[in-house]
Each structure stands twice: as C-alpha cells, then as structure tokens.
Length: 380
Image (cartoon, rainbow, N blue to C red; front, side, top):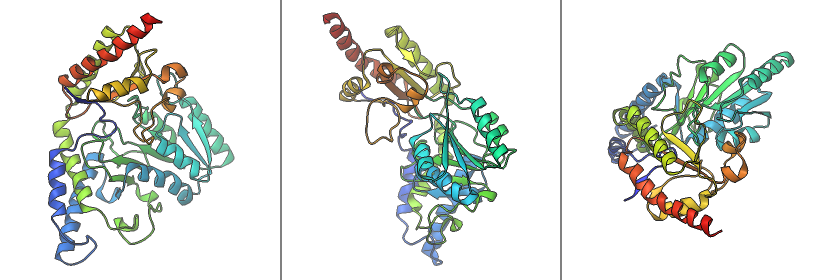
C-alpha cells in the first residue's frame, strides 16, 4: 500500500485541470496574434484569468501570470524595491527561501523579524521596525508568508495589514499555501502584492501569478513584449494557464476542509498513541489544517524518509524547494528547536485526494522505522 502525503510540495493534478490543458494544447497559434487561432488562445487565457481572480478575491486586471510563485515573489520583492524606492525590506525568519533570497539580492537593507516557539511572527518587533522607519522617513517593504509551508502555522494577516496598511510602506504576501484554503480577498485587502501558485491546488507546475494593486502597477516582472498588460514579457503558456484556471474553479469542489482537518487530527492522535514522546511543531498555533510537522527524538529524517520511500510513502522533511536536500530546517531553527530535534523533523501534508487509507499506509510503514529504532536503542 502506498500513500502520497506531500500535498504542500505539489498536489496531484486535478482531472479538470488536465482536461483544460489538453484542450488548450490542441489549439494552434500565438495568443498575441489578431487572427482567429490567436484570438481563441487569448480567450482561453482570459477565461483562466477570470477564474484565478475569482478564487483569489481579485479583479481580473490585477492578475499577472508568471512561471511560478517563486518568480512572483522575487519580482514583487526585488522589483518592488526599485519601483517604490524602498530603503529596507522586512521579512519573517520562517518565510520561504524564495522571499529570503529575493530580499538578499534586492540591494536594499534587510531586517529579519523573529518568531515564537510556534512560528508566529513577533508583532512587537515588526511594529518597532515600522516606527523606526517612520522616524527616519524611510520606506519599508514588508513581506511574509501567510501560511508556513513546513508547519502550516498561520500568521495573523489581519493584524499585520492593520499595522502596514495605513502607512506608505509596501506589503507583500506569499499566499501560496493559503490559496483555496483561506479567503484571500485580495481586492478589498490592504495587501499591495500577493503571490500564488497553481500546483499547490492541483493545477500544473510551471505557472503562478502575482496579484498586483493598481498603485503597484509600476512593478514590471520581465521586460520584453506587451504580454500580461505590459507587465511580463514573453508568450504566455495558454495550456498551463488554462490548467491553473480550471484548478481554481474546481479545487473547492473536491477539497473538503473539514475532512482534511479531521485526517490531520486522526494522524496526530495515532502518532502520539504510537510514540508518546513525539513532538508536533506549531501545535499551539493556528494551523492551516493540512499539515503535521513532527519529530520522533533519535530518528533522523534522512533515515525515516529513506525507509518510508522504499515502502511507497511520500513525505517531506520540510520545503521541497531545496534541491532535494534533507536535513535541518531553517523554519524549525528560527522557532528555537534544538538541532538534534530539528534534524528529526518530518512533514506530512494532506489534500484533495487524501483518505484514511493514507494514514493506515503511513503507520504500517512507519512501524518498521520505529521497530528498528527501538531495536538499535535496546542493543546500545
């Protein structure tokens, strides 16, 4: 019995997304051409843009398609520094590597706000950064991931928007893990730019979007042609975009949040029943209801993942965006987790196709890991 428990890395492709992609691939032409075939492809993109906008609570004109959420985040941060003459960037210590790297290469001074033991941002520290910038008449770009991809911890978006929104500072949100699971409400929010991705909700990899408010329209993602309303040059991939739109339109039909949250609760209950000293990270925080990041002291994630993979169980040690690396997580380190425990961290993440059988399969395979650990411990 196998199980796919890595939805935070990439969700299985939804049937309707696949169908939309196949239909778009059957069309010939360039969506920027004015002839019939070109107009047909343009209609596919426009329809998908409407669907993505609806899912994100945005206006269609606010949606700029990109090659990935990483591209969107990078352009929002690095491009935002130039467009808004930003003096300092403020990021959260547990943000995705895409945001941390984008801040690093932006040319602006970077300040990192810490988190508590559950991974929730230190709002007092953020407030002090804003106050300091206001006194110095500097302009900030504040960036944070709304839902952490490794632990599922949910940052207090409303409170952060209340702090940044009334100021001249710029707010960028990584909403990749929130799309389809939280109300993004982009158009009515105080957020200036927001990044989302298709493959986290059952769309294809290779397409994302940056949601951009009108006053942030000077952020240009890729110079070149006039595609994406002049914001991002390059011929659009109508097939990938069609898949993104179809995923946005159908994800809520197949994703039962209550069912998935119940699966997470059952997994945690069973884990603690089997391993009394297991540690579940961010357990005291508001979490997205799809993710369990845990550690069994003494069982390194490298060992556990190898055994689970051989049994056909797909899990992760954290972010899937580290070139296949397994080891300590910068997220857990920022939360103050001791190195010897963070090296044991495993992430299971559920989604639209998850069932109780996945949990059964996991624990059937994990028993082998535990038995070996107990045997080695007894021998020592």
